[in-house]
Image (cartoon, rainbow, N blue to C red; front, side, top):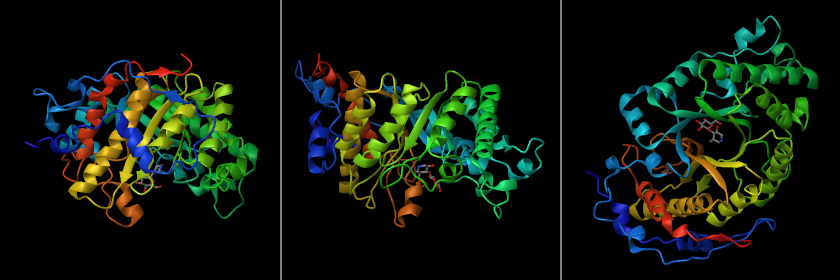
Length: 413
Ligand code: 9MR
């Protein structure tokens, strides 16, 4: 039995934890337009919300993140089909998560089918639904819902899609042809989901990573080059046309806590929101010990939450640590706690419509970050043996302490 180590070492992390942690980081670029929130506590938090109770489960095997966060938002995880196929791993997934995202297998590279496309009667892109079908059936059997990731992206998309006769040696096609191809592709994917697996995918990252790392949009995306700046709006237009009415359409990006990028993405979302084409904004949330700043996370959420009804999801949450010593993992637990304190507070009091938080990977043994950073990374809730880490427990503490937020009021109230 794995005892709840975190609670003994870092038991009392109060509502001020987020603020304290934010104070440790730089707040270089807070946007001026983000509404301010005043925290007015009407009553002192009871001890029971802060301290572990005698009868509170202290063993991860008796705990469930999805149940604990049930009233606030759903909790998801990015996985690959081999993890769903492995009974032991599936049990780990279904205990804590109610939703998953395919880490790769629903990306255009995996879904678009070159052989079928070059043989197609109407010259439009064709998709291979076999693997999607298998995964969505496994999701249904396991009682899991899915985030669809992703339809339109500059990366993990076959280069042939953009060329005349689907031949990379030839020129890019013109705008009209590319729009036809985009519509046909989006239509096929979404129609398959609607007809074969209605209700399983509840949200799609319609456009992923549209903003550049500098200023403005990513102009070197083949979508941008072939169609022009309005490829984003067109993608949402087609997604709206073919998605089931309950499926939520998202713009998704990373570094959404960086001021320049936040501004660019906000303008895009405002334009789509005015036209009724978007339902949500996805903050990927790939954090790093070195740059972590919870204040900027709050600022981004508050900024986008100004848009009426807009859902906000943390779609790819992880936190790079290259050190898994006890001290480092306890520090990571506090950082995760600060994020969840912020989410719980903003969601619970109605400042933001946060609807899902998805971790980008199940455990430290399968994270994309180890390959990407070229050093070991320990960014997730579970270690390589699926043992819960301190951050797993600290996230429970955030929701357990959420009664404290009763009484927080908007300044205008
Ligand atoms: O985790 C994914 C990794 O297995 C792939 O090799 C990589 C290829 O780009 O994509 C990773 O997932 C990315 C996601 O689709 C979009 N946001 C950034 C994620 C991490 O790179």
